[in-house]
Image (cartoon, rainbow, N blue to C red; front, side):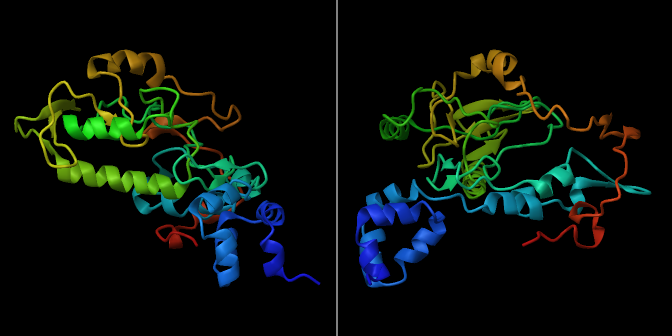
Length: 302
């Protein structure tokens, strides 16, 4: 009888086996012994080819259901009066806990390549408090998810992106992009560090300056050099250039403020975060799940 190590050495069998494993399981299989490592992990191109056949591992949906990571709900999300009320929309509990990972119908994450399904990819599923669809556009006109580069670094990034996208300018859509929670966390961390280390509010430092809500913000390149005024901002998600700033208002009117058709059965919520008395609350349900358990609402569930 053939051993497992021998069977794995045959690529058609290994390819078939990968279609029944998650990417993490495939990685662990390659780490079990030297023979398996040789046939699974010895080549980055080989492993990338195999992982395209893998199943979604369900971690994204697990984060949603446990209110962990990007879905964490803390005390700052609530209004504290005679009874707790949330600032913004929240998941419909019955649907969230009845949702299943569609492991076989998975597509690669645009950033890391790990297969994820519709229920595990990251995007806002509840109606937002304010419209927002493009990474750099919002109703308060606060700068976010952009970077500005010097001429040399800009040319280098443009060369690295050749052949990766159909369009030269950013067309990222918050609701349609196929990315996992891990990559979104990394994006947010990188952008936060860039804004902290390479931008300054009201600096007047002889570098590119852009309006930021009610202030102005100066931008420096990631290499530390100043940025020319004519440089077009790039998206920190895809690294492609945005349209020139003088076209952002039209882009907001035509795309950024137009929200997709979300769940038509989502319960309507009428109110204002600044006037608690005029809020129309959802009807109270008998279910007393994690969202309403105040004793451990601050702790991410694992």
